[in-house]
Image (tube, rainbow, N blue to C red; front, side, top):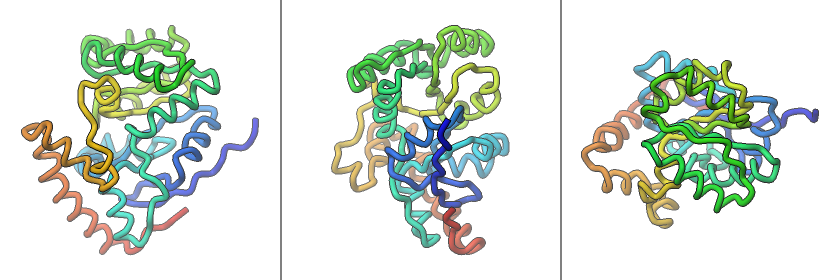
Length: 252
């Protein structure tokens, strides 16, 4: 087996976050014999500050991908710059195409009943030839963890995407990854909702301006107010304090 490519990282909030072009990140992930992957955005940093178990789940993940404008801003405050915004919504379809080209199969776990099935149909349209090993919702489908693990293992899936939100998805994968036969596991947040059309993405110009969070806030103001208005302010304070405490980040 060829050596696993070494991905450069930027250390922020005591986490090593990948700083690489998306194709390189995907190739390096799939070159590993196995991996548990998590995406880290401003909300994740806030949750990790108050949830020790979730922080440990991030610290023990094999790869952490930076997601969103908050992490880009924090990097700049520390004199660094991420090569790419490796958010799950953009990376997911590209990863699906890479899985398809390698003949690897995917299991979708999480979201509301019916959403994973619609997301799988969209993925197969975006990545022709992609093998969906199975789907299971994040409600009744996760009531019995052992039954969920048995279903995933019986499917023969090479990779599992779990979409139950932060911190649950990463805590569940950290706890159960060793029992899964799948080589790769990844928490993907709202990706199934976006793929299925249940939640619409922001227009491209807003995404390019790194203001997709405003779109989410407009769609769900009551649910997202604490996360984006209060949470973004809290994250900015946390980023500034981290900069004063640690100085410039260390690229690796």
